[in-house]
Length: 265
Ligand code: 8IG
Image (cartoon, rainbow, N blue to C red; front, side, top):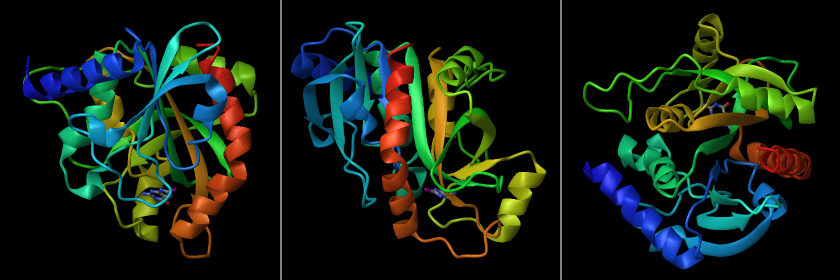
């Protein structure tokens, strides 16, 4: 076993001990604006502090939570909600960024729901609009994978799960997510570049996690909450407070949506 997998296996073992749950079939990464979904999706049976698990770090961003919850779904299956995402811009390296996903896989996950708060390039998406991720463009110049391990990336975000989400909310639009390293937001020129190469959504997470997840065969559903129009698409400058407010305003609606989806997976 390589050391990244060993660290994830150790974290998953502690999750099993602390939750008493042998397998968490679904994992859920909660980005900005999505945290409330964990309350709705099922009954929380254990809440574990990220600080108690090997390889996890307390998040730096105000408004992000740092707990990992074991949640019993109506079906009797268990979901693992990770509220403690590490971002590439924190400078801990790409292995730290995908540790949560590797831990979820080691805890038995077969399905991964990745959520985030992001900027919209499509001006029809008002702040507070949830959008399905149909594909991504990794603009970080990095990958969590090492070695001659050629992973098929032709359907990273499961068509089946996107269709399931649309059965629940037929208004859900979809778009291509561009992951930038951050922490600075894009310049208007960078947003125009993202648009020119086919991007619809700009953010600072998700693509690297999706790569790690596909490399171990997880089926992925990706959802972005558009909390702001990307730089230059709207005339006003971006502020983190505005992003958090848009998240709060949309939270109940998108949490209900996400909870319904997860209970149908
Ligand atoms: I919330 O406009 C949120 N996260 N890169 N650009 C990038 N990340 C974001 C944005 C945005 N909004």
